[in-house]
Image (cartoon, rainbow, N blue to C red):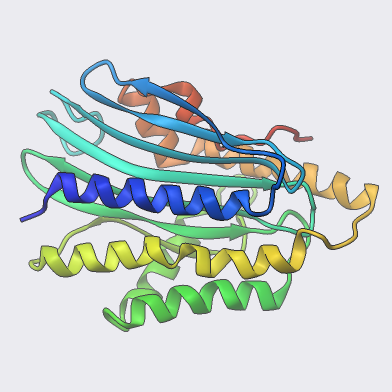
Length: 262
């Protein structure tokens, strides 16, 4: 059996760990938190940091329920919980990173979803891409060597911008509706993805956040952010779920950058 309280407590602790790690880059700035309530049950908390290194970082938690599940699996009561984060960096050479892990339960079934992906904003470094993917692969290989090829392929397909015919970034891992006949193993894999996210991104930020950059570099970054916004508003499932479930717009639109150009 899946213990919903155990899952939500895990998510809250992981969120606090991520927030604390990001704040180590910002000696004079802290996340500003804002709780919110869902109209049909539950709610969440927005956490946004605006600093010198993180132009904007959002690390959000939600645990909501209601009488009718809003997505494609039909009507009936549902419970959905997760954390979702996004970073938009002041330094153009430091990539944007996105991570989400979620658990959803309806009358008919229950499943896990999530992953993390990396989006350089005009400046891609092979060593960063390799480190990010190697961390994901090593994490998943401890559970099943077939998972990384599957999940990385999912990311290539999901984080694809059809109208530009290109990927949003350099990929990562993505999975949804994941449920096998062994819920305990599913939960362990899902938790490990969350627990190793910082291993994937922190070494990259330690390399890139203080790297010199020019005004022209910044212009390139702002232009690249435009495509990120296009994907999140047109195709992202999390944004669609937030809209269709009557979620908090401040929460599900936190992924949008503070500055962008088209």
